[in-house]
Length: 193
Length: 193
DNA sequence: GTCTATAGCCCGATAGAC
DNA sequence: GTCTATCGGGCTATAGAC
Image 1 (cartoon, rainbow over the protein chains, first blue to last red):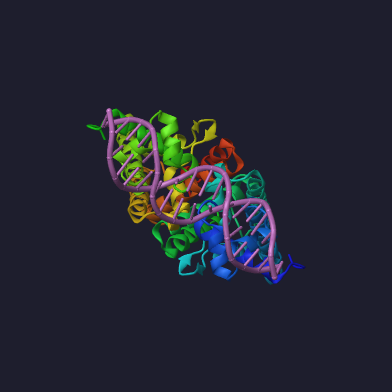
Image 2 (cartoon, helix red, strand yellow):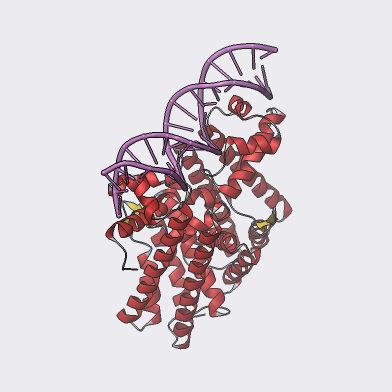
């Protein structure tokens, strides 16, 4: 993630913010240039095409999540608490707006994305489903989390609910939408059946 | 919905298809013109601006759903069956791709949408949540559907899961994703607690 | 109502000076 | 590395003939 110039980092960070807000199709090199105080042409030095930039942004986003998983593991060994912290992260406010998962947004735009970006989005989904499945599995074994069927299926369902909740929060412009839905969902996984 | 010319109807239908595929930002008047065999300028006769067109498309989409609700009511009075039919509709294949809810896609693009379109998207969410809440309520009263908390909260959670499942299906390009997640979710509402 | 023609703008991308 | 300048193209939208 490092051994890159500060300009490179600034472009990546700016593009991440813009893509989380507007998606792939509605942000431009001009937006980034204005945000970090350089010229459009300079961005092409680091990222020849928009395809390359978007691919790097999603790869970076995935790396951030991986670091988050490690930090979560460091924080607590309790699967139920790990799950709660994961859910809480997406409930934070960003720029006065509910946080939005970059890859939920890109999944919506999927059919208009360059192939290299599509692959990264699928990788994100796979990583998060795998992490959630492992957390659910552990929680089930120690009796703190409960669900029907396989951990893998429950993980897919859980992730779908969270991303759908973020969509609803964005649609209404109300962070509370996510908080309420995610709380109701967590309740289901805590209940014994 | 009628007392409009056939060209008007053709534009609306074409725009709906394109928006469900590409979203608001990635479809153009040129796409519609090519699809239905007229010229770009003619579209402006019916829909002066892209804002107007998108607003009309979402309003039309909402009306289709309302007609669907009525047809569902006609088909069966059993809430559990109504819910199943609702879920099954979004699992159909369209143009060789998993069906995608227009308003899930637009919710993702929300921050880049014209105000009049945003309002329509929120209206869609509200209508569907209200319909689902009423179905869940009825199902609970007659003992065929089960959930924790209020019907309104369960409806929001259920809708979030479905729209998240459609996102996942689109991300992977696999309709089965939606079918599996929605089936797992329905299972939760059928289980007695 | 539908067309041709075009204005005016923004886009991604490149060339080449410094 | 960053800049200025610009190209070529797509976009929404309008003017005006038919």
